[in-house]
Amino acid sequence: AQSVAQPEDQVNVAEGNPLTVKCTYSVSGNPYLFWYVQYPNRGLQFLLKYITGDNLVKGSYGFEAEFNKSQTSFHLKKPSALVSDSALYFCAVRDMASGGSYIPTFGRGTSLIVHP
Amino acid sequence: DTAVSQTPKYLVTQMGNDKSIKCEQNLGHDTMYWYKQDSKKFLKIMFSYNNKELIINETVPNRFSPKSPDKAHLNLHINSLELGDSAVYFCASSQDPGELFFGEGSRLTVL
Image (tube, rainbow over all chains, first blue to last red; front, side):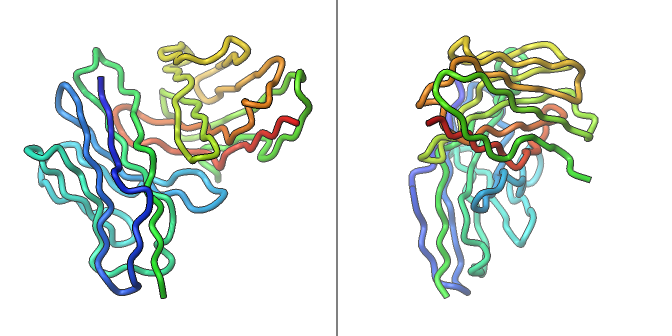
């Protein structure tokens, strides 16, 4: 069975500082990993994904994430946070070994608060 | 053009009523989903359809019945609504195994 853990309910960072939102996963095969962002009263929006290739993937709005197979992690990062980055962030995983089922599993979400 | 659209956006109803939420995607994707987001923002998969066929049916009361008339539509019908059904319901679509595209959500309040 696949699972995703986001160990922090909330991350606080000052505007202009780097930010990290943590995600670890568990799958039986090779993972497909995703990050999504949800603004208040909106649907989730795709930010970036890791399928294969370079461990560092770049996505929308200046976000990037690093795939670390040995630590089974896929942390979301941004070099300089903006107040407008404040939102709820979800990590998700798809297990390509799960008998052809591609149903993604989502973490519980991390609320990012960027202070002016 | 909205990629994944769901209606209504808000739904307020009494316990025991029956209601439906409609979803349409114009992305040409093969797979559609219904997710439930509770008050703690946790996302739980309810159903998944691939080319009009049900492929995932998680532990959901049988009062919830999805219907997919074609691969661009996945509707959710809920019978005998209960207080605990109050949540935001999200429709999504994808072209496997890529990312999901979500609708804006339908907030259901059961009184």
